[in-house]
Length: 249
Image 1 (cartoon, one colour):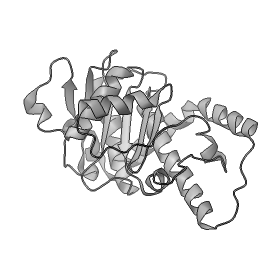
Image 2 (tube, one colour; image 1 turned 45 degrees about the vertical axis):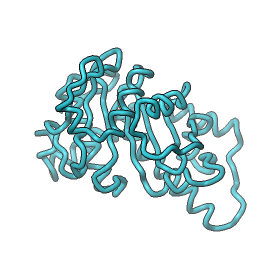
Image 3 (tube, helix red, strand yellow; image 1 turned 135 degrees about the vertical axis):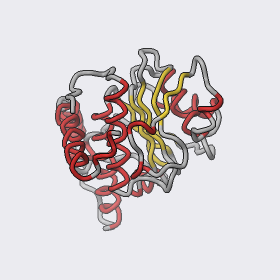
């Protein structure tokens, strides 16, 4: 299996394998929502062409060949019929409006979604994982129901601003990145961070926040070790090649 480090625009075959591994692993972690939720990977500089999962297929069964290649410049109605309308609305608009984002992951994981339902959904820096998100997350506090229109997709994309993470109020979370590996590790870590934060809130004790300057330094340190994030996905693929080798088919 190839190494993708420092290669933002991967080959279609490699992107399919990477994304299929993400589906399989998040299913193992029970971070998926039945047969909903969706991941995409852009294959073009302008974000117009991207891979995405077919609707109503369980994450644990997705193979590289199952992913559907869409083109916003030439939408195929037969292909669109195979896609969750919310997936098309969200991912097409984000890839077009933020072509620097090459991978978009959307999930409803329990702990992150729990934090998204709070009056204050800020991921407060109370440990090393939560500090990764210090001043680096956008927040949507106006849930509009199912995001099944281009207008709603544009609204969500615009909320990202300069960030690549969106805490979707009363809904879930969206993670974007220039790299599938970085997006994968980011989604894993944000759920761990929110698990710690949720557990801390449950104690009913005051939170001991990390000082702002330390939280900022920690976030920058995270940003400096993208090789760690890429290695995380590489190791997951090694495990899957042994335990679920059909994911690359």
